Amino acid sequence: MVAILEDALSEKVLAGERISAAEALELYGRPLEALGALANARRDLAKAASYGERGREIVTYIVDRNINYTNVCNVYCKFCAFYRTEKDEDHYVLSRDQLDEKLDELSAAGGVQILMQGGHHPTLSFDWYLDWLRHIREKYPHINIHGFSPPELQHFAHLFGMPLRDVISQFKAAGLGSIPGGGGEILVDRVRERISPLKCNSDAWLEVMQVAHELGLKSSATMMFGHVETIGDRIEHLQRLRDQQDKSGGFTAFICWTFQPQHTVLKVTRPTGVAEYLRTQALARIFLDNFPNVQSSWVTQGPDIGQVALKYGANDFGSVMMEENVVSSAGTIFRLDAAQIETLIRDAGYEPRRRNNWYELLN
Image (cartoon, rainbow, N blue to C red; front, side):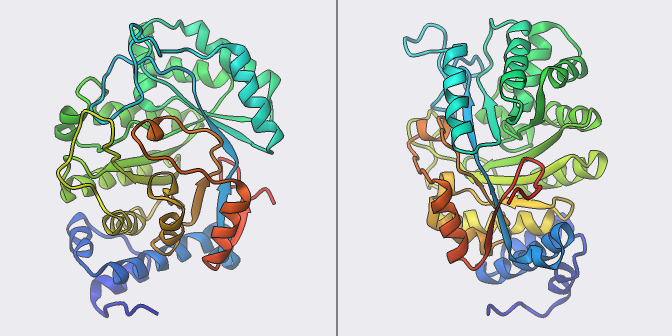
């Protein structure tokens, strides 16, 4: 059992009280295992609130599939190795047959969701997106469409000359079920201007979430760190997420991962290590007191560290993820099936349970 410092700040955390940005910075400097113990205590409080006392024993996961409908993108983020231009020989837009093949495979595996994202394609029409959504909803009604990151939705509003609310509303009517938190990176514009200057700014990212939540769509929130940001920037990012959740209340979960530098334009002098990943996730669990779920990132950290992260505030093991293209393009490739995920969860001392996007237990 890791000893927790007996001081006023620790007592505040253990009581489930809100901490300030200054207190977050103080916590960040504490020994890793002590910070992890505090985060784990906050995890237990959150899960007891969601599922009752037995919730402390549960770790959830989902069976879904990433579908990147195109790799064409005109924002050229420096941290991305996935995007292509329409002039590149290996650029693509999936056909309807290719989509159906992927969804048939997902259905056969008991999947309940797709994470559908692409680049900022400059020429696909508004009707193309609506037709895709309607097709999936009608042919695969059991599959939730968790699709289109906030930067994509802002791109659509600009490209089609439509109010953002109209875009999201029509997408929802056509079949969109929820929105992923991609493209958040760090919600500090000074940082965004360095790593993705053509992507929407922090306010625009948050605007999508506000509108989506008002329209009844839930979403996740993310943070990609370990590049040019400071610790203070990470805390500011968390502050903006917490403030948004106070306003609109539609975030289901927080997921953070480290920048993967292989094959990208953006380079770092020292890659972010495991300890810093665990420290950042633990701090997020404590600071984001209004987020019910925190997901470990085995896709970037590997299965073993994904398992360890369950003791640093995470209560969800993410997705079986039958397909992943963006992170793997940067050189990081990990794969797990449902049986392997359940074994990792059990070996960590928890009960594995499948869920849907809204964290309702399925088994």
